Length: 390
Image (tube, rainbow, N blue to C red; front, side, top):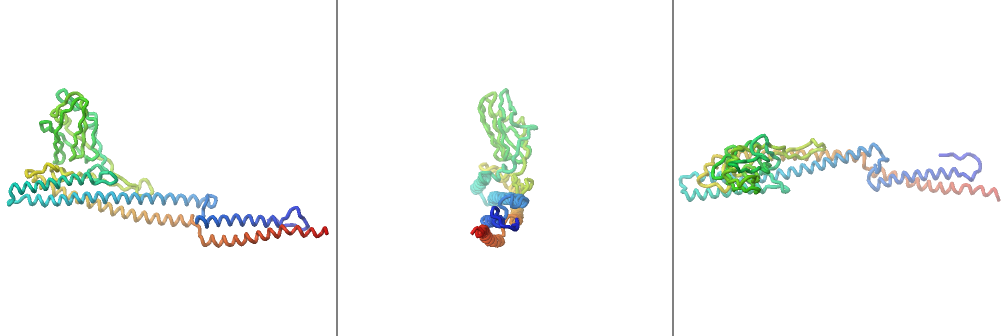
């Protein structure tokens, strides 16, 4: 602040300039505190606090990332709950089937009673397949073996896309294979005669009756019990059903390699992931040894030999899902705590202390008034020199 020297001068009013400078400074400071009171933020631009602005924005990004991760945890929990419900329904159906299989072995029952029981078992088996295909989350099938398995065809041998299947001079080409719902392993193909081809794995069999395939025509062989689909295009033909079955049997196998498990990001880093794999085959053919729609009084014994082992395996899967849900709950609790603590740290840097800002604003308002008064008085001071000219 300039100090006026002695003498009588009117061209430069030092006192008024000092008062004006003080007023401008007070007005600038008051506007800053009023903005903080209006926004609730101590840092409204990088100029307010350069380092604090950078730190605050980094913390804000971390909070947003953790919040999104917590949403992912919630989605994963909901998805697993839906899958668990589907598995539990199938386990309940298997328990009912076990009860009826036990009742089937009853010397007091005649053929009519056993046929009726076999019919009930067959209907329950069909419901297992319906539950398997209808258990979905956002349109994604969960327990048909396709979720998280992501299986692919092993091209090292056997049937694969592009393979030519020839027999007796006629041939077809494999144009597509869908094994996304298949468990990893090797599936054998055998010719059962009469244009019937059989796929087998782990003691489970499924027979498909083929149709004649004309040149340029295509057909898809759906081994639904195993989650394997093979699409063939007629090349030289027509190729009879028997020729197709023979050619497939010559290729002998379908080899499937398992893919990676489904994953969610459950933390700030891209490496903070939670993986889930639900690739157990819960088709009726696998669980009961006979596919729904094929069970009769003559093969109920096959169901009896299979059901106990498969039920124990299914219950183990349900228990595993429960443990995974517990893990997700722990992750959600941890993320919630991290979000709260990060927001608290950000608040100390970013948020304004309203009480302190109000105190400063009132002080500056008073200084604004006194500076304005002093400026007015300083502007009047040179008029005193007019008396020298009277």
